[in-house]
Image (cartoon, helix red, strand yellow):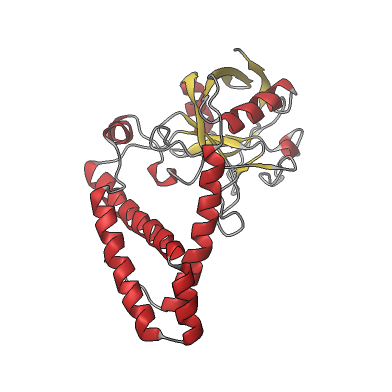
Length: 282
């Protein structure tokens, strides 16, 4: 059961979030699937082959364009965290002096989120788009150029069960926000009338409906996710929040070498690790 305080404030917040989510969903519905594409990254530590997913066409098209423009050539892996991920794509990292803090650079645009979940998730080797945080980016739009490759770690069944419990709570909040949007006119009318009793009654009704809907199709990890996270590893807490638009198909041992690099306090490798060139294979 959801525990909710400050009824009017919460209902208003839910209205705003639901409107943003509906806008993003409509944009996704208009996307057109394309064929998968292979891209080779030649790095100072070895070669990595990426598969870009055709069902995330906006990210695919953008990545291919940047590769063909030579945008990634010479850029550093500027953020590296062992057992988590390696990140690159900041244009200000090219020829950056030692010790310079990196990670803020980007082209002057963002890409609408393309969540193809749970088909694409943050398993080991997943290619995903970096982005600004939710506070400044509630629509979860992706960076125009920065991306990361997941290394992650493996999880026990008990840990995955705990994640499922958290996801169900998040699912309930999403359902509740949607129901609030459906009752927008009634909520606004009751607020104007300062009818707290009716607001409480409506809240209780929406909470009960939320619990019922969530129980019919709980948002839990699929069998494929559980298998991957318990054997290969990954970063499941990022699922549904960052667009996964590809995966490593060759050269994961190179990614592992990169993630083990010695870094400074800002997670930048002490010795530069760079993308020498990027090339579309097909």
